[in-house]
Image (cartoon, rainbow, N blue to C red; front, side, top):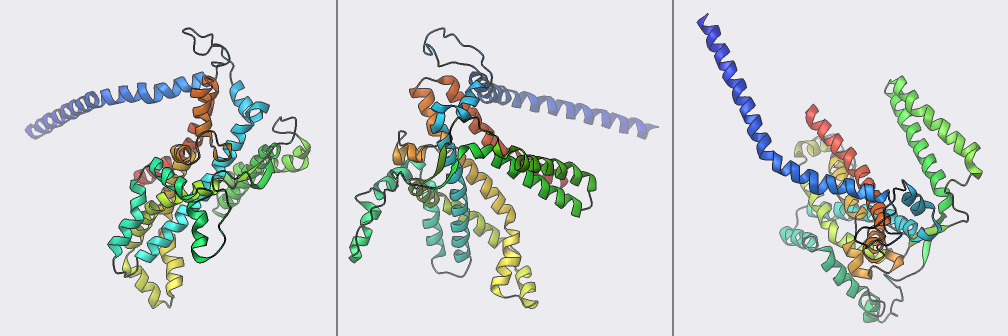
Length: 387
């Protein structure tokens, strides 16, 4: 009897201590949570609300401007309005820049990490040299590369040192476009892409034996794809009254080179840490089975680097979607050939005083970043809970 009373007393004291600790922890976190709620999520909510109004069409700088709720009108104008063609080209620039930048950083980082992973004299020196650009700000990088990519100097005059004619490429001011397409076909292409993804996920679920999930994913994909191909091919999905051509501006090549130069050292450090973390026993076991050095690299090392690649893609993609300072420093805000939505948001909001449309552009950027970050965070947290 006495033992049970002592045990009950201990459990009661432990529960009281736990409740007190939770109360103290809550009080300690409360100021940070309140400030976070006001200055982050509160301002995000205000930006979203402003994007649903017409603030900026009238006397936007008046003490008490007349603001009317217009719903999704600003978003409709951005994607289908005749006067907002620059936003659509900036969006295309951002997509091309993000894809090429991420692939270039991953490839260059993996190449440098593979070289440094071998026995090499002066490895610490080379590792420092490759990581040094990452310590610079994008403004400094943009200023340096702006000098180097001048049309009448810098890189263009290097061939003259060996007796060859100078280059005539306009690195950040070229108006030439490649990979051009019609914006009216973009909605149809996105629907087809979503249909293909759903069908592939359905096939994957079918192979794993989850037939119900396969039907829930595959059937909507088949229906959407069949509708677009058979019925909606002649439909003007974009709502534009005329064809609108966009493409990859070659002026972005200089921006991509500068961004890759700065961030490839980051991916190199990630891949080098991953290569050094692979147990040597796995390589030795593969050698015993008769695998060559190339086969070990392809079938042992690269698969183990997939989590690092995913993390690098998320970080680099996040940087690419929000890129602003590098382009601002290299080519300025008024060069439409290298402009991106972040630049246009700045011009629209703070130079044109169209606060609602600028807020709409900022909200779209937030959604694009969220589509990249949130699935990665959910997957990471889920793996942590399972572990």
